[in-house]
Length: 236
Ligand code: ATP
Ligand code: MG
Image (cartoon, rainbow, N blue to C red):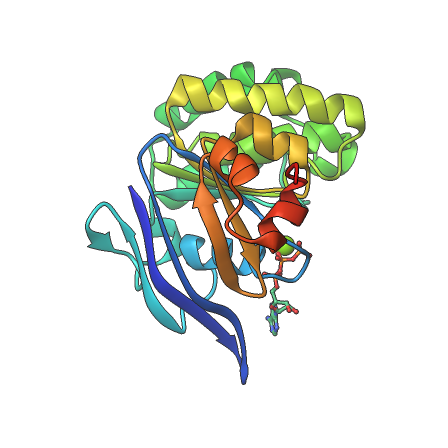
């Protein structure tokens, strides 16, 4: 399970997360939605440990992970920009996180093969990111996360740079991966259909505050307030 307990983030005097409480179970697919600037990426960064928490606790199971280095958290993140290392090949990009953890080469190679065949990028392993299409980069970014075999995946608008057709294909693929790996996922998107088709739970945020957390049907059919109703496009 992943639990956020009264998580706050301040940048200087500005509080951008105002005490977020979220608890999800292993295997949940939590989709985080809300207007631009409401704090979604900031929240993912707190979970990943890429930025410090001003107040509150993030726990996996009953272990508080606030002070754990990102590499020591059982968490992998896929960014909107993909954030691939431009000077490394695809294979090196995928392998890097394993090398950092001193995984022996034979095992690294085995994992890279497994993940790249799952994502159908075997033929791209010796290319550099600059020689790939957007969709191929997206797969490599997923491969880099998958190869670490984390307990929790964080996705920050992973499909927003793809064209409509590819977006639908990748959505199906992510759904299949979730089922196959029974992974726990926190996924940010602006796409309502993506949210409704992928989520086991939806969290709606506004101005650094959680408005509602529930199943897609609960949030859509029983919005907690008019903001949620309007944002989700619920029938009135
Ligand atoms: P979007 O949907 O546009 O990606 P978001 O919900 O991910 O938005 P965040 O990136 O989490 O929003 O930003 C939340 C707020 O925190 C914004 O007002 C943003 O300007 C502010 N913010 C983010 N990072 C910093 C920073 N390093 N310093 C100061 N303010 C920041
Ligand atoms: Mg964001």
